[in-house]
Length: 282
Image (cartoon, rainbow, N blue to C red; front, side, top):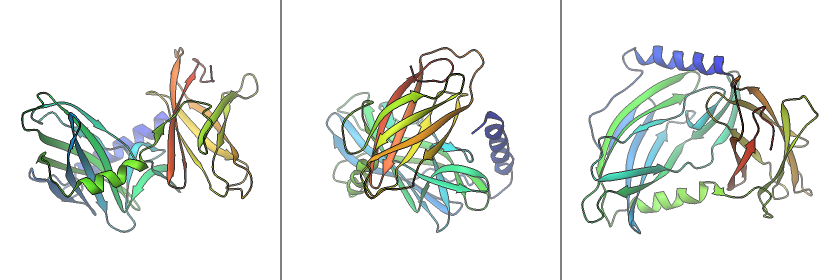
């Protein structure tokens, strides 16, 4: 996704949010009904010295919302936890998205219902914890509309929400080193011909699956990713992706971190690769 496209998408969202009914703020509560969606805070009880919580976004049929990297269209959710009480740190964990392609381009989305697990570290372990979330997120079908909600929830033990959060946990990509020998893994990142701003990612995926690779760089770095070869193979477990540097800062210097999220079936892994200032593997 190019910088120009991102700025244009952001402008569309901003303009739409100025019209009544597009952005739907709600009174502070544990849940809020939005445009073709409902967002809810979940309490999952204690997890060691931390608390387990979740953000649930339920979508009407045919609608979608976006991953932390929205792809070529849409905007990612934003979270403001500053009104929370006795909270030192909040870590949102992202289940792997789906790749969606239409006339607007390639987007990385959630459909039907998304649960984002949240790990909450308290300031003082023995005192009550209250989560307060201001969330802005995009809802999309034919056009994309911004939605807004303000939620709060005291965290407690003995809650029935824990099962929903634990079901989402395995969908969060497991962190994995480059070259790890596993049934799903990113094996290598190798530069293409000299002078060309693209490189080849070799992965391993179970036979019969159609793996998807998501690439994320730092701010103002934009990549396109395409699969090389057949969508799936009943025999081979080795697959290839071509990653092209579409845009990068003019004064970029390495090392540049690149996050690769590889998804196949119900499994997902996340691998870090280091690039030089030209956007090629180091």
